[in-house]
Image (cartoon, rainbow, N blue to C red; front, top):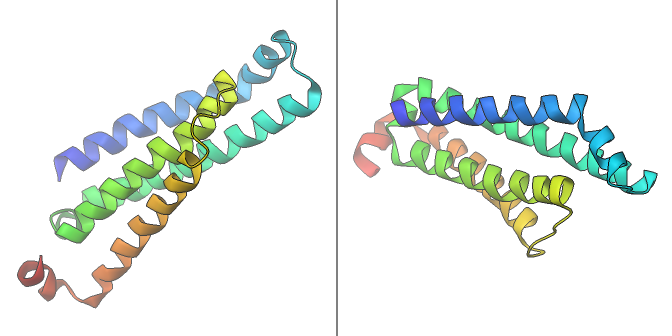
Length: 137
């Protein structure tokens, strides 16, 4: 599905941009804000986790989008929705803590993690056979 490949491209570009900022300017920016060293280390670590999950799930989206049969199935599309929600909630929650110092609602990051798990479980159900996708979805 074209929308999945487009979404993966946009999310991939955003992930690379955030990762580049984290590697080349984030520490100095946090230091300039006068944050203590332990807080800077925590935020850098959180950003690393967020970028890693962001890019991993962006690649999963791309794989689904490039696999026409999977991308056209309801379960494949559901996986894409869950992965996108996971990136928004899990990674977005961590990014807001890293860049803004804002936690937001405490459940945002774990809810994003749950979305990632549900996305992978949707993909796992595809193993039950492609012949069922056309009839059951």
